[in-house]
Amino acid sequence: MLWEVRIAYKPGVQDAEGESTLRGLHALGFDKVEEVKTAKVFVIKGDYTREEVEEMCRRLLANPVSQDYTIAEVSVE
Amino acid sequence: MLWEVRIAYKPGVQDAEGESTLRGLHALGFDKVEEVKTAKVFVIKGDYTREEVEEMCRRLLANPVSQDYTIAEVSVE
Image (cartoon, rainbow over all chains, first blue to last red; front, side):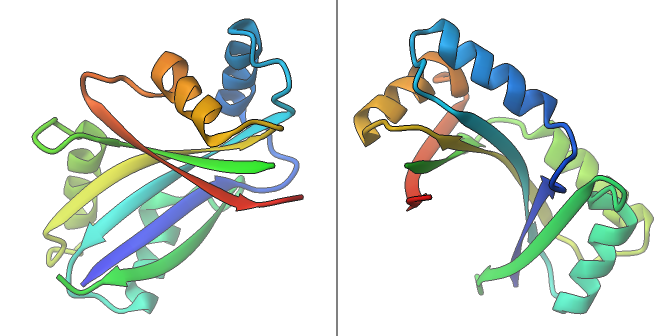
C-alpha cells in the first residue's frame, strides 16, 4: 500500500521557508507573487491502515503543536 | 491564482530525509514500512501563467540536477 502524508503549518504559525521563498521570487522579478506556503510530503510504502499511518504522524512525522497533517491512499503498488 | 508546485528527487538520487524517516519509523516499531520518499510542496498565490511558474521552478525552487517538479493549478481564491 502506498500512503501520502502531507504536513503543513497550522494557520497562524510562521512558515519561514515560505516567507524566504516569497522574498526570493520577488528578488527575481516575480513581484506579483502574494504568498508562498510550504508543505512536506512523505510517501510511505507499507502494509498499514489509515489509523496506523495517523499514529506515525502523531509520533514522528508531524509536530502536533505547529503542524497539521492529511493522509491519502495514493495507489496499491 | 493558486499554483501548487511539487518538488521531488529524481529517481536514483539519494533522499536522505526519506531514509532517516524510514529508520525512525522502524525504530518506533513500524517495521513493515518498506520505503519512504519525501517531496516539498510550494503553494504560490499570484497572477502567473503555468509557463511563468515553470520559470520559477527552474530559477529558484528546484535543483535541475537532482530534482523534478510538477505544477498544478489548485483553485482560484
